[in-house]
Image 1 (cartoon, rainbow, N blue to C red):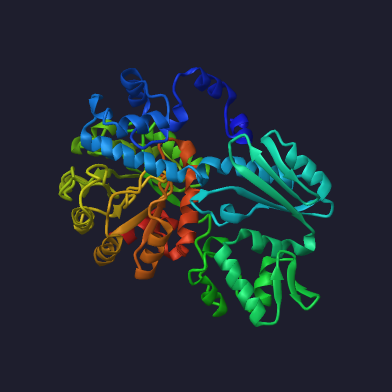
Image 2: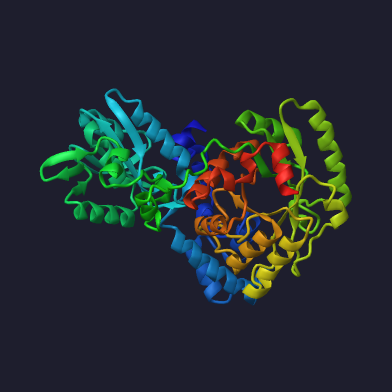
Length: 502
């Protein structure tokens, strides 16, 4: 684990991959391609890498492999193209532990006053192209020396007195800028971005007879601000704006009016309402998931194992769900200071009906519903599936409403504004699935839901206790959508949450 955090790779695993005749990393990155498919493609068509897979699909040879049809062949080409478009940007959750480890190492150096990963990392964008480190220190030389000689570094691309550019062993590019402490705030604002946000700030500065750059805010040659970000924004007549909002999408006008919302805090969640156990496709017992959540600092979880029509995930039928609910009650009798809620991730069928009867669902504490199949339906039909589920009085939450997988698939076509409107009318809650390859709802959809007054929950979609850490990315997504604590129901204690869902 330490090796992975430091380098983004595990040498023993990389050695094993090198002995294989196929490029596992490339092929496994394609949505719907798993170990069995990779082996079958190699055995039948000698597919070794992404280029081979694209070639056999274009040549019409893929349909000769068991399980593939002409339609699936065309779908595979779309997935390959989608994957290729996303290769230039990494999912933030994949690289986040490494980013934070380097940030921590820099901050612990003697003479360093501040150190942070700025840019799209600080804005918590779902994908990042590179990593921008900013350090405040009186003497940049030892910082530069440390940065360019870190074990995580594969190649030093460039190095100057205060700037360095490296390529990490993980494949990511990273750069470092060291600034004096008195310029920390202005440099932090400048290198956090976004570019469009910063351009607007510079326009405001010019309109006030000021000059804004990474070194400070100046009136003529006199520096008037720059030590802190708040000082910089204040010099421009603006309220400080959280990094996640800085996309030039209306936040600056709010800051002019001192109306920037108080966003939901990273430690505000009290519960997690999408958690899986080994009874479906999770890898731990319900008790292990509960104790893991308590250790993480949560007060409750909802166990949302899959339901019967999702056979590949070991879905439960109605009787099994009720039996599980009884066992959960027995567990609650043993747990102190923690509560497990009986729930389910009910499958939404092609026509929008659910695969579990309402009289069973009504006996559970919470019911979530989600689409897991028939992704290629027309937008009208797909939207109506979600609308019908939202109108079902047994359903409390729509899980991962668009079905997307970042850098793998766009998700099914859906009129999300209509779904949000129906959610408002039916008091149905929408989920922000915090698993870093989903982050579904998207940030723009979160903002739309917040504007319309639809309540949200942030869930990890945990299949193992270690996955509770994903909640950080869900909170970030909520903040990027301008959500406050009042917008997020699982910031409430369990009793108030259940009352709010009734």
